[in-house]
Amino acid sequence: MLAAAPTPVISGVLDLDRTLWGDPAADWTIRMASAKTDERTAFWDTYGPRAATSAHAWRALVYEARHLGAIRLERHRLHNPSGVDDTYPSMAAVLAQLI
Image 1 (cartoon, rainbow, N blue to C red):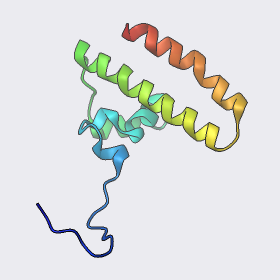
Image 2 (cartoon, one colour; image 1 turned 180 degrees about the vertical axis):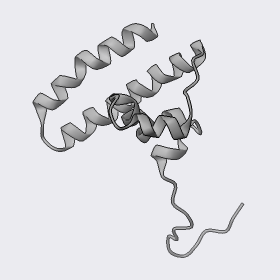
Image 3 (cartoon, rainbow, N blue to C red; image 1 turned 90 degrees about the vertical axis):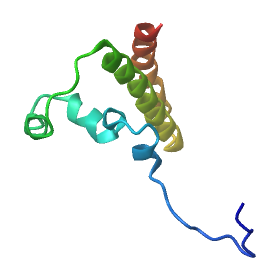
């Protein structure tokens, strides 16, 4: 065990959005690159194709639910109740596919 410091010391910072799962498919950037088929196709040409397995599809739904939850919290933080309400149908659709 490490000895306690007399005052708090920051010894490192983890970017939770990118370290939570250890799976690139969980990253916000990947979600946004998947959102539209426009100039973002150049991203996929370089990044490579996404996996097409049932396990990948299930994880993508879990990650989408997580992202929708984050969007909901951000809209709540910004005092945007109609924006919060807008997330419910999307979350319901994702959850319906997961159960």
